Image (cartoon, rainbow, N blue to C red; front, side):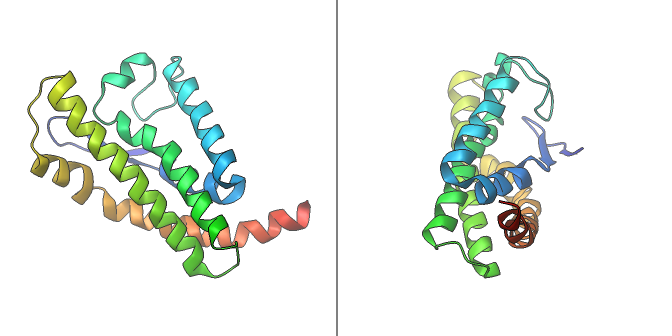
Length: 164
């Protein structure tokens, strides 16, 4: 399921992908999340329609691909920050790690959007358009996903540890 935000020059989408990227960081750790998300990206780039609007190598030419590529950085950083905090069950630790993952994804996504639009597709896009389309319109829903992922991970990790 996706929610489409019809803005120009490229539509933005809100999905649960980011939620699961954060959970991968918490459950698999930094290295495991990075590897699993890179595998996900490889499968999508091979042509399997697992991204918000399909799949295939042509996705590299979509300005929003930077957010998908940023998933690997987000999963890694979420896991690394949570591990750096020494784990623990405090909700603020989970939320802080998730917000660092959010920063990583947005940094990669916004930079790629700007560079791809202006220098690959030759569609002039200013910093203001990137800020509004790629940040202001989507950061609040993604922050809500950070909170949800933190709450779910806080409940999920103790249960997974009991299974081991």
